[in-house]
Image (cartoon, rainbow, N blue to C red; front, side, top):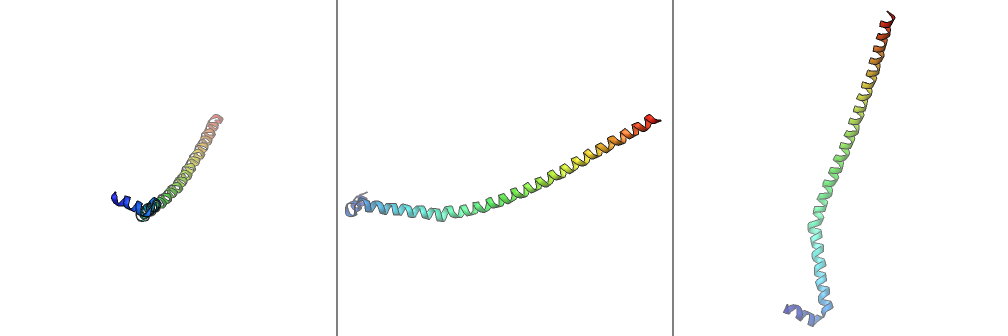
Length: 96
């Protein structure tokens, strides 16, 4: 504390404060570049991988939905054909 008071009396409060802020800015810059930037780069890579997986899953869901729709249409067509055959069989029985 005595050193700080001596620095203030020797250089003035604004100069000491500017040096303190310079150290703070250096400390924050060093932390961001050494700690945060690599972590953000790694996280960004993971995010890109996850987005690609989501896109692939979405494409799979679209293909699966198309297959389900095709099966449902086929089933409906089969039911219509079966009803038509039953109707035809009933008409033939009525004619006899």
